[in-house]
Amino acid sequence: MTDITTRLAQARREIAIAARRAGREPDSVRLVAVSKTHPAGAVETAAATGQRIFGENRVQEAREKIPACPPGLEWHLLGHLQKNKVRQALSLFSFFHSIDSQALAGAIDRIAGETGQKVDGLLEVNVSGEETKHGFTPAQVRAAFPALAALPHLRILGLMTMAPYSENPEAARPVFRALRALRDELECAHGAALPELSMGMSGDFEPAIEEGATLVRLGSSIFGQRPQIQAGAE
Image (cartoon, rainbow, N blue to C red; front, side, top):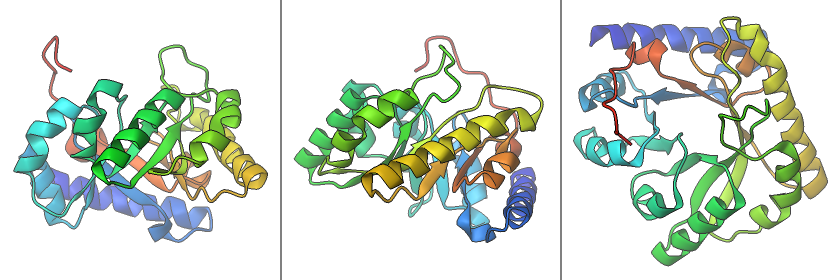
């Protein structure tokens, strides 16, 4: 597990360098350590270095893992959330990166109201238009934003996207730049405060930071290659 400690230290150095290169303070970028498919012991090792924010993709996996992890950590849901699992998710996660439809946002808001919670989240935007990705189109975000911003129990704090896979990190830059521009447009048009941009993963987080990311989602560069998931797993 010492490899996790070493990789985390390296990731923090690289985040700080990218932030300074963009004229930003390193602490303006938060690292989400993506622990999906990795055991609670890996989370414990990362937490021992001071890492506090962890990301999971599946409610079922998180339900089993989170109780075995150290207390006091901040858990973010990164993956697609089915409406029938919202209630479970609200008992596990404090922050939702992947609110990908108006119907899902409504379900989160309604159930949060029933449970007396205030929930923070981001709207997932499919900037690249890939058919395999979830998320609002930019046009859908523009149309739905007034209603989404008015939800009483769900606070929309910004936007999230995933760039198409490429071995060249620079290929992702136009996607990240477009998400930032959309965020700026929504803030200007609606007088909204949208401070968070979740963009950038292990292969492309440096251009994401240079384009304004406040949350970067790093998994394999911290925890190593993911174990194979059994067929049929959620």
